[in-house]
Image 1 (cartoon, one colour):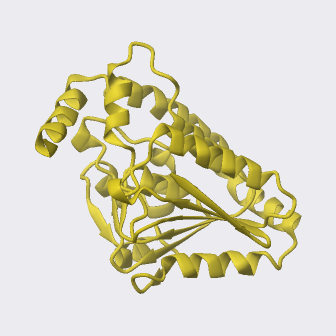
Image 2: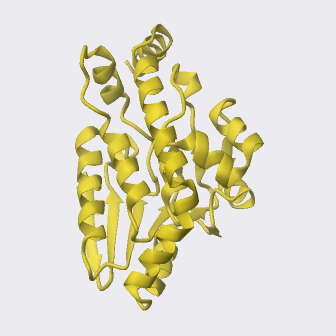
Length: 248
């Protein structure tokens, strides 16, 4: 589930499915998307904060959802990519606090946040190729932009894992804190924004993103098509089946 907490000037979205390491389902993506839309349209909201419950950010997309979509002849559009598109177009500042796992879309969505607070033991990984898939969430543009081409290749092709300190060093994270402090630190940053003029914040963010907005949208659509094809591929089917058999 997604818990939504609100205080003066900010909205806090909490991914709360600890029994599945906060893996994201279609309904959870839809709730997040609706919450981002509402916050962005609320004149009283200066910042959005996204964190995970239980000392985990998110283990990524729920693999059962992947299996369902892979088996459908005409699958519905990806709810995860709908969330990413909303984050891309959101002019309200978004701050993430990351404890523990940030896997797959748990890492790529961070590229669309304006600040990322990482705990020292945070784990960032994008194992798309290992699952027979390909990058998503416009990460083929955002990762080289934020991290540089070599670091992006390490994450998206090699499946490298980054710690919190490594994420800070390469620019994936903007602040490093001790374990258990990421949520509090993210909220502290957001509260600083509540004292600033809302429209000045939104205009400044819009201008910062404008040079790359068109490229990111084009990448999102290219990846959407390629990801859907890879999801139905034999490589992906075999990888998902192998993971499923290990769990039984």
